[in-house]
Amino acid sequence: MAIKSPKIKTIFVIYWILLCYIIAALIWWYIALSQQNTFMSQLKLRELSTNDATYVIKRDQILAAENRKRAQYAGEGAIFLLLIWAGAIFLYRAVKKQLKLSAQQQSFMMAITHELKTPIAITKLNLETLQKRKLDDQQHLKLLNNTIQEANRLDSLCNNLLLSSQMEAGGHQLTLEKINLAIVLQNCVFEFQNRFTNRNFISNIESEFWVMGDQFLLQMAINNLLDNAVKYSGKASNIFIQLEQKKQTGIVKISDEGAGIADEEKKHVFKKYYRLGTEATQKAKGTGLGLFLVSRIVKAHKATIHIEDNQPNGATFVIELKGID
Figure 1: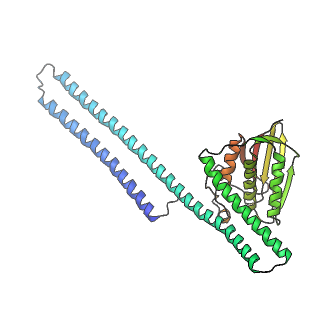
Figure 2: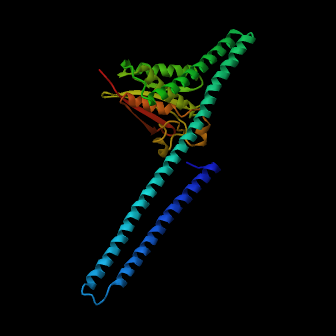
Figure 3: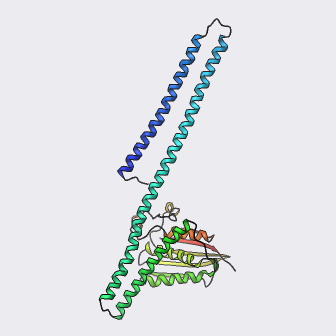
C-alpha cells in the first residue's frame, strides 16, 4: 500500500524513530551493564591476595561469574530485542492493514454512492419526462424499459450489499432445493440479453444438470459474473457462457474478451472491496463486492471457483459444482 498522506507519513517516520531509539537504548544499557560487570570483577580480583592458596580457585570463580553475567545480559537483551522487533513489525503491519482497509472502505463508499445515485437519477429523469411530455408509444415504451432496467440494477446492488453483510455475519441460511442449473443459466443469459441488447452473448448450455442449491444465490453469482464480463470487455466483443457435465460435476464457464487478469491479481480479486489496479478497470463501474459475493456463494455450496486466461485475450471464470441424480 502506498502511503500518500503527509500526516500518515509523519506518523510512520516518528514511529520508526522511536523504535530505533528504543533499540539504541537497549544496546546502550547492555554495554553499560557489561562494563559495570567487568569493573566489579576487577575490583574483586584486586581484593584477592596472590599469596592465598585458594587464589586461583577464587580468581576462576570471579571470572566465571563475570562470564555468566555477561551471557545473562546478552540473552536477556537478545530476547527483549526480538520481542520489541516482533511487536514493532506486528504493530506496523496491523496499522498498515487497517489503513489499507480504511482506504478500500472510503473508495467503496465513493463507488457505492455513485452506483446508487446513477440509477435513481436516471429513473427520476425518465419519470419526469413521462409526466411532463406527451410521447409516442415507442418512446414511451423505451423510457419504461430503461426505467425498469435501472430499477433492476438498483435492486441487484441492494441485494449485493445486504447479502454481503449477512454472509459476513453468518446470518444467511441457504435455502437448498433441487434445481436445474441449466435453467438458472438460461434465465440469467436471457435477462442480460434484454438488458444489453448491443452485446453479443454466446451460450452453450446443456439441457439439464441438477444440483442441490439455493436458486436465488446461484442466480446472483451468475449475474455478478455476467455483469463483470460486461463491465470489463469492449462493446464489440463476445461474452461466452458454457455449462458442461463431466461425470457428476457441472462446470460453468463465463468468458469475456477484455483485458484479462494478471496472474498476481487472480488470488486477490475475490477479496472484499478489491478492484483490479489497471487504469482501464478502475474507470469501470463497480463496488468491489461482486466477485467477493460470488466466492462466498460458491463456497457455501461446497463448490470451487478459479480463473483461467481466455484465448487470445480476456478471462474465464470457472465454477465446478457437484450434481445429484
